[in-house]
Length: 244
Image (cartoon, rainbow, N blue to C red; front, top):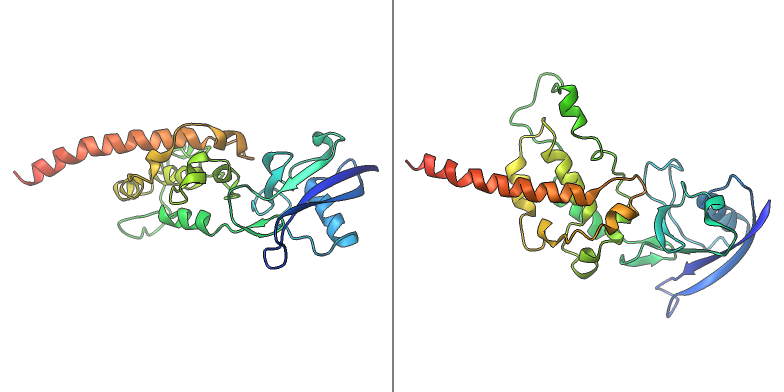
């Protein structure tokens, strides 16, 4: 066991005039993660501390927060990798704070809904739609997103325009565009081909650095832009043919 200090962001909008930091010193086991430490603080030191948690396996994304100035998953961040200095915990930046480390992700999930995160098909198949190994491989690096919000929180385009879908939503949009089973490419591209859509990405790569799953939303967004150009190149020819 070793003693570690945690400087944790505290703020309850209903009672506090402004945010503040509260320091806790606890005995930490070498195998503990940040979420283990938060559980220890809440159960033994301060039951008023608010944070999100669920799977403890890096799958649900609910424990995403800012740890030592970097967006991470608390359940996957080992205390041993953070050093012996005080560990600073803050809520994900640029989301409205509900309480302490808990933020309001309503706008984040509204952006996910905007891109319609489900497969569109002209008719319901009698059985599963078969994909070739190559078609399935096209989805690698796209389906693994856990919707933790870490990338969107780190995106400057989102900071200044909350109508921008953000990297997580656009990564998921490209997942369906690239999926051979989906039949709504045109509709998906049209929904994000707007002034506050895909063109708000300025390839800053903050999202790539922030993603706890090692995904590359910036690359997916650039591929979406190329698909839009390709789709617009085909559409005029199709329309011209239809009117002849």
